[in-house]
Structure formats: structure tokens, C-alpha cells
Image (cartoon, rainbow, N blue to C red; front, side, top):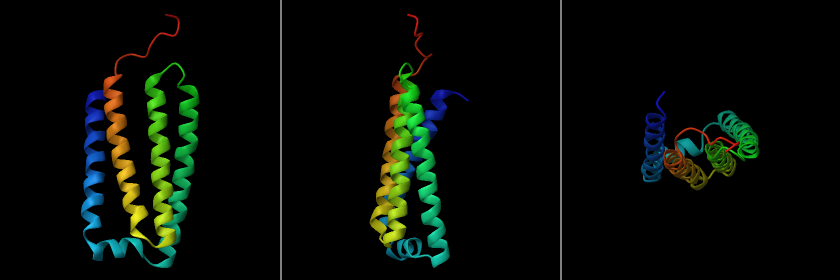
Length: 132
């Protein structure tokens, strides 16, 4: 797939997440249903968010440690770190029964994807030759 098209799709998805967070914050009835699902669903959402956060954080650390010579890989590692933070924030929102961390998670994820996609567009091109 074309890297510029992929970046454009990621930017659109990030902007959509920020807009969705804003709109959902203005709809208290819907927000209440999302924040307070049945107990078993809530437990699954918390556990799933934490598991996703751990996987993203592990991949982030691997990408950042291997990204010494490839700036694009380093940027992707930073993206994964912020997505892990967003997953942990979502888990905290469901655990506390508060909508604020869920909205913060959407905003963190959306802005991070937009920001890192722009960075990847700027540093696009073939990776640098480490022998040069």
C-alpha cells in the first residue's frame, strides 16, 4: 500500500477519534451506557484494555530500542507508547466508572495518530544507509 495513502487514512482516523470524543462528551445518555455496562462486560473491557496496553507498550519498547538508525521505526515506537497510554486510560475510566478517562483516551489516541502520521510523512523515503 502507498505510504502516503496509509498516512492519510491514519490522519483521518485520528481526527475522527478526536471528533468522536468531543461528540460523545456532549451526549450524556450514550456516555452513561458506555461507562457503566453490565459488570461482566465492564470487567472484560478493563482486562482487554490492560492487555492491549501491555502488548502495545512491549512492542513500543522493542521498536524504540531497534530504532537507533531508522527514524521511522522510532516514530512508530513512540506512537505505540502513546496508544498504550490511551488503552490504560480507557481501563482506568471503566474501573473508576468515570467518562473523563475514556474521553481522554480517545483524544490521546486521536492526536497521537495524527501527529505521528504527519511525522512519518515528513521523514518519508527510503531508510538511511548506516554505512554512509
